[in-house]
Amino acid sequence: MSIQACDVKTSSEAQQVRKYVKMYSRMGGKAYVHSFGCQLNVSDGEKMKGILASLGFTFTESYENADLILLNTCAVRESAEDTVYGTLGNIKKYKKQNPGVILILAGCMASEPKTLDKVRSHYPFVDILFGTSALSQLPKLLLEHYEGKKLAYDMTEYSEEFGADDQIRESTFKASVPIMFGCNNFCTYCIVPYVRGRERSRSAEVIIREVEDLVAKGYKEIMLLGQNVNSYGNDLEGGMSFAQLLRRLNEIPGEFWIRFMSSHPKDATPELLDAILECDKVGKHLHLPVQCGSDTVLKRMNRHYTAEKYLEIVDYLRARSEGFSLSSDIMVGFPDETEAEFEDTLKLVERVKYDNIYTFIYSKRSGTAAAEMEDATPDAQKRVRMERLLTLQRQVATENYRRFIGQTVRVLVEGESKQGEGWLFGKSSAYTIVEFQGDQSLIGTFADVKITDARNWAVSGVLVK
Ligand code: 5AD
Ligand code: SF4
Image (tube, rainbow, N blue to C red; front, side, top):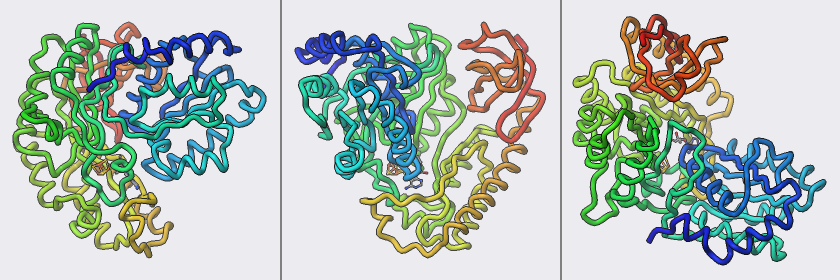
């Protein structure tokens, strides 16, 4: 069953909340919404904004003139949680001076049972707490708060899917579309399956309609989101596979690009790789997190593939599309990672020649299997290993990006570049950052740029038309 924004808006709770918002908002009903973490969380934040707007709120970029502060949190690493608690510490003073301000904690951290205890004991000034699957409960929780409840919370995992109508999107030309929620993989280091629940795929019909609608509205980049989009449809009887969904979306008329995130190597079938290679609207880039290059560590991580299997996918793509762009997540310092195991990661990075890697030092998440593993590797050594990995990647990336020099590539122009006055930046089909000089009116449109220079994180060039 799908709860649509209109159902939430017309509920009796919503009607009552609208009255309270008018009555009690000292700054005219302004809400500050901040999403931490991944793009799925950002997408949830846009939906929360849609609900708040329907309740009479408008938005502000600073919490210091807000009637309502909503922190949409991330729990993937301890550092992400620390950032949230740090932000809460800063907000405490504002809240003390303005006790009528409503403070809401949502997202992945709010889905962890330990957060409820921590909020009760250390952050009693939080008013509302709700988990990732309880978005539609926001009006009900606000009503409970207005009616005097000290801490209104809901951490239930609702199976309903909250529709995207009236989502307040950050960009007018880039849109994300969640195609599935949750994860079944239980990588031993990862908290996500515990906070986002099991895989639930949205119906292909609804996704197709949503993308058609976005394209009709002029969106130029559609980012399909899920923790593991490659297993899209596995939970739907007779449903489309992810490869079939890509091919179907590729048929929608209009000039736009389709991207997706994230993919699990164990589910990257030739059927899917062929769809990526053959669909002209699908970006010629694959974010395929390998995590590490050592088979023994991959086993301890419960990843279900070997380095060799991963390289077979890379070779399949490269054999059919020379210079195909790949990026990855790589984790350093998994419990008891040895020097030899780490060197296997370096070897893999050198062999794959990633355009980009997102690197993380392993962070212990209580409740996961890896949190129980012995770990004798000192933190200082993990940091040195991280430096070695980054140094290698910087060399690899500069060499990689040189392959674009002399080529004219199509770019979706995203904004002004920090290069200097008159410079813009955008991304190519291969997801490469491209900088060039041009007029601001190009932002949100496609442009052709001839590449003249390469650095280790971007290329630059000259506008062709
Ligand atoms: N510690 C460090 N990095 C982690 N990631 C997930 N869990 C952890 C953890 N406990 C990284 C993985 C994943 C990315 C989104 O975050 O590399 O692919
Ligand atoms: Fe976490 Fe693994 Fe699921 Fe990705 S696939 S969300 S790393 S458990």
